[in-house]
Image (tube, rainbow, N blue to C red; front, side, top):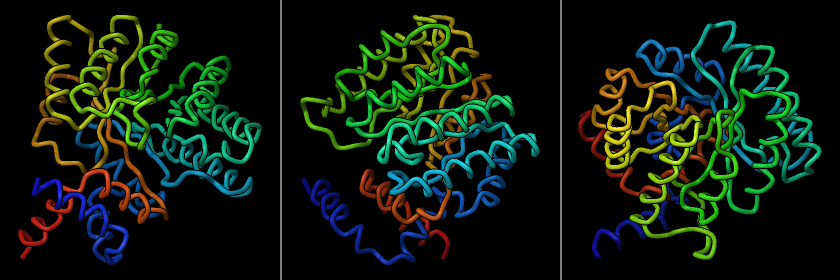
Length: 302
């Protein structure tokens, strides 16, 4: 009860914490404000054996000009990745490229990104946001797949609908990122019990790998990683059928290095951009215990 109270208190005070404190936290989990800073981090990760995905922070662009600017920045990233020979792709949020404004706006911007992805021979991940956008995001993915196969969606394990979505999407063309889900949803839409979410997560990954798809296993939960690693070995799943994915900066107690040593692909999602403050506040709200890590690091450095 005491720790629950502390966590609730931290969630309440996070928006009022000084920018300097949030920046101290962000320095570990955000790769800077500019593409140049983020690309440097990607190079460092590549040199250590990791693949990467770049994600420009932000969502819900308010007008077509902003959505077009985001699209252009992602287009430029493809060029940078190619010219610097980086092992890296990109991930976009549909509302960031205009889905909130107009479906046609988002589709036009997506088509631009698909064209550039094809020209640079790279992959495009279409991220998943909260439940009002699930159908539209899957529709965008399916239409994109008609024109370019090196594209993939994200499915959130806590949604009740996710097993049906995987069943309908599964096959050799599917490259899907499976995450637990971070948005607050009602019980009618999503599971809210950790054990139930974990069980469904494992079931979804197994369904993908049994059905011919490629699974991006996106979790920091060591229990899930260990359970799926064991299942993968027992069922002799080829390493070219999956990869493990985590957010940049999250401490993993050496487990990532162990996965690399097994010959598995491990991808780190690298967020950057001017909206680092909003992102960091959200991450702190999602996981208040991270503040403990920040304080520990402060005292270790003294």
